[in-house]
Image (cartoon, rainbow, N blue to C red; front, top):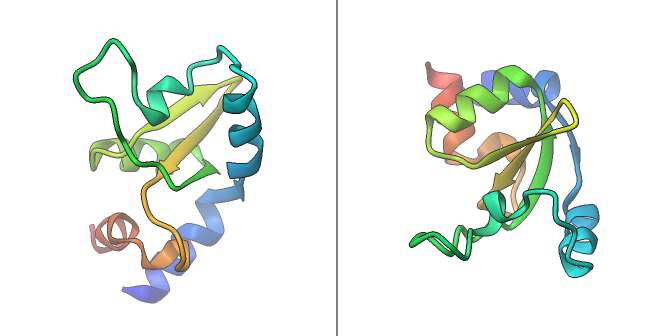
Length: 100
């Protein structure tokens, strides 16, 4: 299953945009990042996104179906990854998708 997960990452994970998103949030960019990090109007404030990755349409749909937050902006999909410190292919959600 790890090799299938690696293939999903190679084919569907584009790039890490965590630094860019951090800068936008720091400068109060009003472009919907509250969907990633929590909406002040919502009861569900904290999502604990550790990283943000640009992903394909296909992976965005799969991640959403597993309860992960994905923001679509300018035709791109951005995944609010809840883990860090390990390869994306080792994330539990990627492993579940690979097993489907």
